[in-house]
Image (cartoon, rainbow, N blue to C red):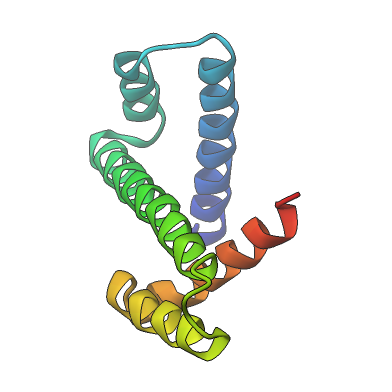
Length: 116
């Protein structure tokens, strides 16, 4: 029976991904998305998904702000390279928790590698 539950969970997850993608393509509103989620995974899971999206959006905003602040330090020619590195490390430690540092550094590398 446990295997069947796992298969059902995977099926609901796939259904939710498909319905969410369709919702995005059709330009649906938040109420429609909420309804899709509640019907597919239930109200409690829909609440958790909304909370997760809010956390991700807040992190994305912090990350964008951080990238701008880091760039300002990098462009500050009045500082030596060592001083710039120290300021960046100090500010990074203030901006991100230990758990977020790995993700933040990874996103920095992606940003740096995609910059022209």
